[in-house]
Image 1: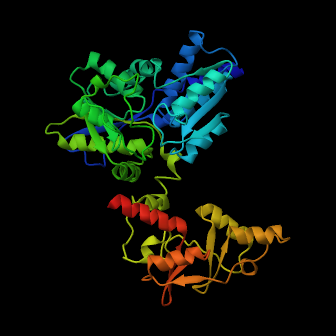
Image 2: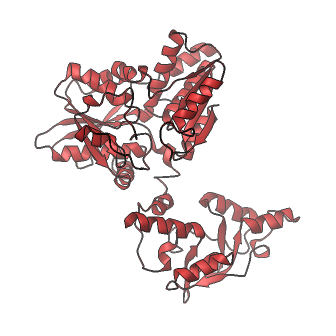
Image 3: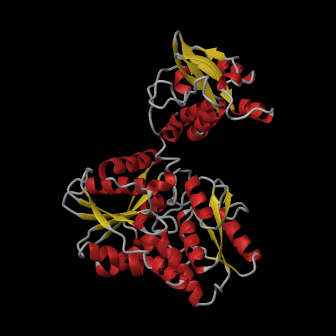
Length: 459
């Protein structure tokens, strides 16, 4: 098979994604169905518009052979574009806000794209805003095209022509509501246009993260000031240019905590591993279903898969750091410990382990120091500086931890004060929390910062 034919065949697998009924969640009197867009080759619904926008640009001559595609993206459109660009022989430059998961960034780079990570906390028009940067890079790059999904009218057209008819056919024309999120608004606008023609009674329901201004606009018609949210890919701080918000009938606001825990529950209950926006959409769909007094048939869009969020929402420690999983509250310094010694995961190392083992544990757990434990007694601490000192000083990774660790430890009692903790940090130590014969774990500066952040958010 020729390369061209192989490329064409691969791209034909975009779309025609499965529809499954969710049977283990509380859907009230309704039947809730999920459109599994993570089964697209690039792993998300954005594969559809990536192919559609590129082929439209090829047809009208905006994109020439060997050219460069530039895009501002929350990740999934960028991955889809990078895949299409790789298969079609284009260069790809992606500009991604820094709140997006590391998996999305690495996925784009693995496909051969140049990925530039910029700040999330800047408004539209700021030089470091991802859309502003993409426009500037495209203007300075010969042969470049800024796809500009947020303003590209091929975006909603793709969904009107493909996604919507698929849903209609899979539901045998029997559907009362569609629940989805809005980033660029391409999906919900395309679906809304189609269903206004074939099923005017159908309700288009927006699932919006708390902090986004879109739900408020649907409710009041007024543009309000946006806040911040963790959920990726949906929610906006301005009205989407290609979106028709008049097609949205209702809007339900879901906060980050409920979004992420709902996604995790969906995996346990239904075996569907969706991304963070999936949690927002499923939570909103369940709320809408439970409010109904008559049976309805509802479709929820699952935009992408959870494999892009393993380092975040599917990581218990990340969820704890963010305050989304509650630990036992002791009311003392034990509350600051990110990884308590009484957990199933043992983040310690014995003194007779090699430095290679210690480094491997640090990398696996994404930490920079390890308590050294012998016979349930903390006998030392080893960190990255200790490893470097030994290896650069002529040692090797086969050396034992006991020969490298520091035995100078700062131990605090759980009921010691924050001032005593800070004094420990000021001396350059981390704090080992011990109560009589019980070792509870260690507290670092990062742990204190995360604890303070959680306290502020809860206030």
